[in-house]
Image (cartoon, rainbow, N blue to C red):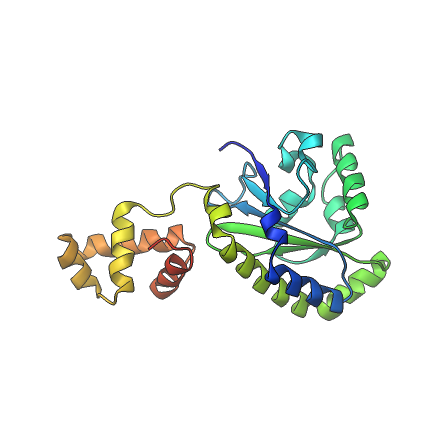
Length: 238
């Protein structure tokens, strides 16, 4: 996969964003950056395409799109699930000269002394929100303990809304999610057909239908058939 970092102003022109920003400000956080990476690959593969609200050229000027080699937050939020201060994130890697340059850019952008919130996969995408905080590191760490649950809940809701609202941006950065046969199977299930009825309609065995359903759930990162149908509808796959 060719490494890319696509910058979208559309991410910043949204009522969803305005509401999120207001909610974050009420919790004491200021400027923010949102990034999402296509995650339909091995979890430890950092060679991913990313959509970001960073200004165009913010990262590429320093690393020619090899963002995972320069931005220390990237490997962190792709592999972690809990919010952490930027200091903790930066201490998780040995900073190179280029990484220090990027930290200077983050400082100029006002988010280097704040918090990184890794967000769970939503149909194959791992995301994070970086928020600025004006207090000291010790105040930030203490504050995270107090508002962590609310912060994560608000961020998750924002994550789902922004990925859903701008689905075309993200789906353009990944492979086809379902095969033609899988699409037919999930469409019939969404219409209310049972497994045997799907098998009869497509002239295949019940076992084949079950295998298709299992593969669909894997592709959509769904735990149940009902959630797979919901995701397929949400992302306009059927």
